[in-house]
Length: 268
DNA sequence: ATGGTTGAGGTTCAA
Image (tube, rainbow, N blue to C red; front, top):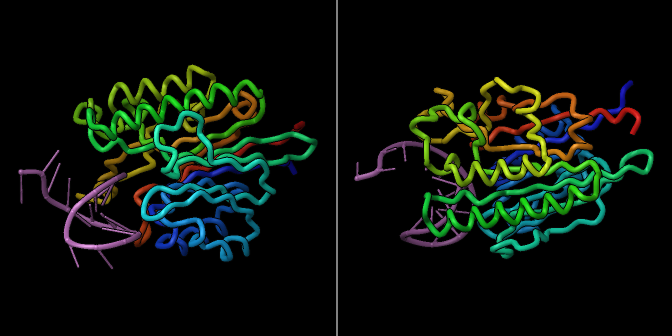
């Protein structure tokens, strides 16, 4: 059997409300590592026991009401950090990083990120979003120098290209598709990160988020804003990637579906 | 009137 490792990312929009679905996802799809965003609870209130029962180690960075990120991993987590250098608002829980030890003394660095939504183009929150993306980009560049397997997954709140939005004409210049946001995302790719889904499927339109309002999901009016970005060492081992759309179809669904990818660990 | 919906925590804000 070929050794492999699966990594998923999911903005759950409240881990408490989504707990039954989260447990089902962990049982059915069994990712080795799951990156969560929008916990919307403090770290102490995170439902640790139910998830640990399924064999996961946890790294949690929560806060009251908003934001909150976590890493769930079947392999032990080391060097856990919630510091994003030059984070414009470090009081907001939007970043967590850890190191996973793989067989044969190899290391995998993993991070869960929740990029600010930005609310409205030109607003203070939009400037904050761009500043956060710049900080994330610079941190990626620093981590890339380590030349290790690196996976930074999360809700980037940016649809990179026309194919990633349901109506590129109507969406032109609007939040999550503004040229400045797309340029900030592209800068991460130019630095050497690979967009896992798009690398495997250059011409497939596949969204990861659909608005709760106006029957957007039923009409497939969505955006692809949840991404797994890979260092070259990780990209070389990428085997497949998919959006788990069934989770968006459920009653009381998150507005985001998980994105999952699989890596070969042959000859690591 | 930017409508429409969800979640947290309240009688509104963020997404």
